[in-house]
Image (cartoon, rainbow, N blue to C red; front, side, top):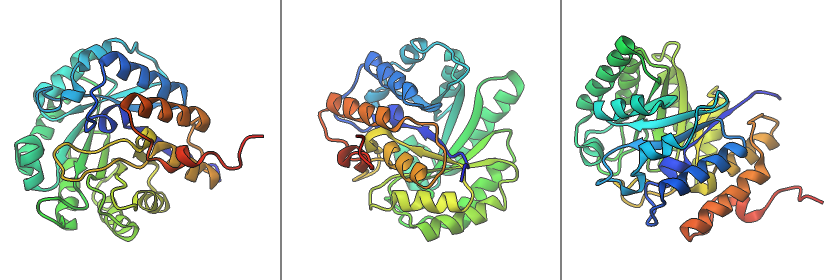
Length: 301
């Protein structure tokens, strides 16, 4: 089995945005460089949000300026509105990822707008990009599998959003289990439904491990044909606007599982584990990713 699974490293953004310890832009740049040395080729590096709301993400321009263009790397900036898109363009980000909340309640708390307004923003950004150029564009539908305020999110609602997004000039559509409520069977069913309306848009998956189903959900996604998965070094992560939010699936756990099965990821697992230990020490916490805690198998001689 030599199928390549692309793992998008989200630690520098999703991994850090909910931490009590706020790292400096220079420390975040060092984190990104270590991840790139460990094999990460697509990384969520910054979030173009108001630092008053998410102070952990302050200094996005400073981070981008410290990372010279590299044809081997694709650095992603999170965008919530047109101002965020303009900042992403000005910094030379390789990709911009627009987040749209699949439920109105989460959208209002997280981004101050219902889903319909966020879809209008996505359309406006896509149109601006088509007219004037800019980085590659993707959309992530957060709380696609469940909302902390509304409960279950209708699969039909998610499919409708994916259908609408697929009509826009963008490159990729991601489904995010922001609060970690999904199960492998639900993942497979929703993927099959979304694939039917996504056209030629690539699908990506983003899982949190809140209820210990993250890796099982990733497995279900791979089995269903998805080749792009998000993960966070050390298992860091969480949303400041979602109660009891916990980390993403650990990148080292996902790499271990996939490569042990014979898939290719392009990561250097020992280097990734060292990076997890380094960033968690900086944050004053223990990695939650199991492979970093348990060690490699078979163990090196």
